[in-house]
Image (cartoon, rainbow, N blue to C red; front, side, top):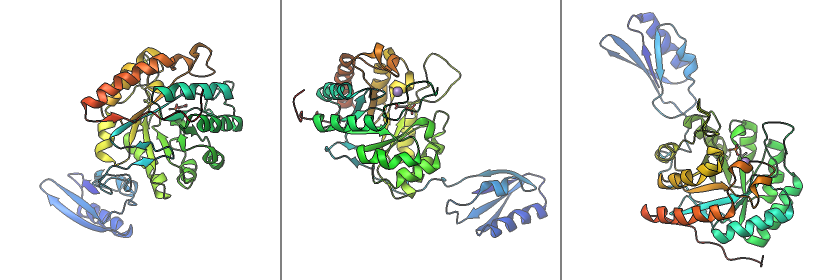
Length: 348
Ligand code: PEP
Ligand code: MN
């Protein structure tokens, strides 16, 4: 951390900063330089609080030199993290992973049928919310425990693994009993008690980017999971809020190469919530793969006009098939492939 002093800072101001840095338990190195002095804080273990220095007399700005996150950083671990799931799907390797399914589990037959359909087209991970974080308290909130049970049936019958959301810390253990990956939604990215609990769940966690989160805040949220000992973390870009209204969110595809350079964690993209519009999901899914995403999460519904949530952004199955065909071509062009489809466990 570098504390840059104002050009008119006095000797007293400089020794005030040096004294505070020492009080904080670090070494202080004043660096005189032409019109202004800077003071280096040496030995930052990630705990040094810039706020303590920012307001001191004579301080112009405090510049972080090392990142606040540690274990999620590429500096901490150079090789890509691979998350291996019970059905053999590996997230973060050469092969892209496809997560697909409805926004919400709406019934047992519904989730089993859609699982068979998307599995046949090449998805190996089934998505579907049992606990739904809805903007309005009057909207469908999900089937809860029944939804989890139906997901488990769909997994048994399709051979897919299941990703589903945990909404609160107390719900983590229940979701962990049924899910192969615990999803933490955009609205909960900075719910620190939830992150800590998910970090101790023993299950991989899919961490969606908050709708107004910087990449640093997102990586620090992931750091909570790793700090609890959970290294199986998958990041999911799903768009952020913007001034513009042409899509539901602004899908930040530049986040893919940026995260890849800062972190070893796999990153997937959700163009369904990222755009909110069915007709925009395929082009942005293609773009995400071209930009280096490790996979996609796509909402697919057998009857989107009657979906209980997010019908407008849900693909019809044949559209999902089309997207799969196209990303196979794009993956090849960038030296990757798509995870091989699973064999059916039992007939449809
Ligand atoms: C979801 O994936 O069902 C969901 C609610 O997404 P997000 O948290 O990105 O809004
Ligand atoms: Mn949804």
